[in-house]
Length: 151
Image 1 (cartoon, rainbow, N blue to C red):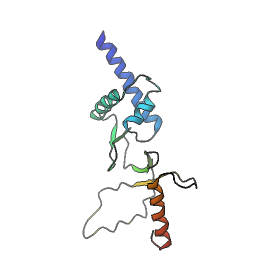
Image 2 (cartoon, rainbow, N blue to C red; image 1 turned 135 degrees about the vertical axis):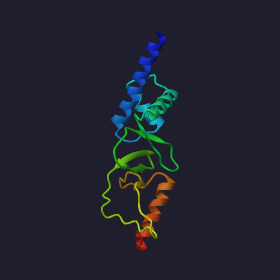
Image 3 (tube, helix red, strand yellow; image 1 turned 30 degrees about the horizontal axis):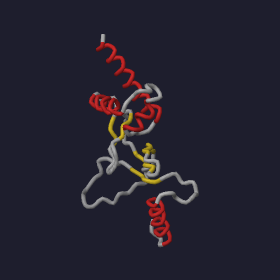
Image 4 (spheres, rainbow, N blue to C red; image 1 turned 45 degrees about the vertical axis):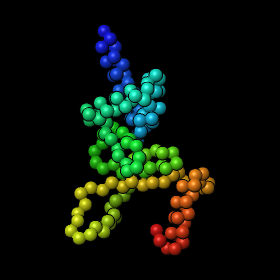
């Protein structure tokens, strides 16, 4: 009987994680998964999220989204390439659909592209000065580049 109850709890937990990823509609990190999934299973813990994510990955129920220099995030599997926008201030990842019809990479020699994944970094622009030093610095670089005719 204990096994049955554990199996049912695991099913509820796994479903809560799946629901979290579906509701968010974007790749989520483990802490974000926990925050969303607690709506369905309030006493869910982070260790349980990690355990279920590992199991769900092994069963191809979810897929990992790896971004250099960032924690892994997870999403419901999708067909085709996933292009991403990373909100650096909120530390969130969003799936985007850029128009790549005019993309020219200028590859050297006889190299050919096998696949392309676009990853854009930025933050919500509300017209107000940026709150963090990092954002102000990058905004300043963009402004200098624009004035000098670059970018």
